[in-house]
Length: 52
Image (cartoon, rainbow, N blue to C red; front, side, top):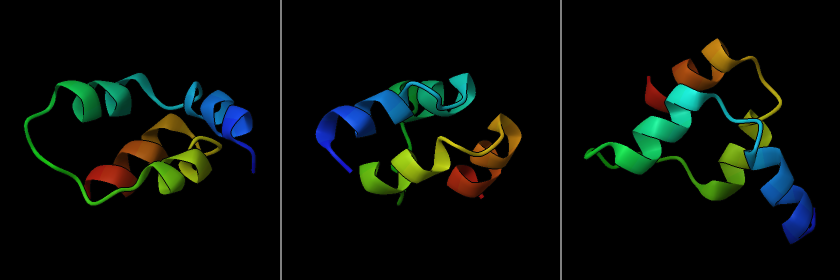
């Protein structure tokens, strides 16, 4: 997966996931690499997999 394709996939992350990751004060154990693959999931599923 190239850098540009990873960046494009990140555009499909759920708004709540982006908000929590950028504005939240808690550190998460999810990597940027993992987020690229989560981007294809439904938004509710993304939230559950990242924050549960």
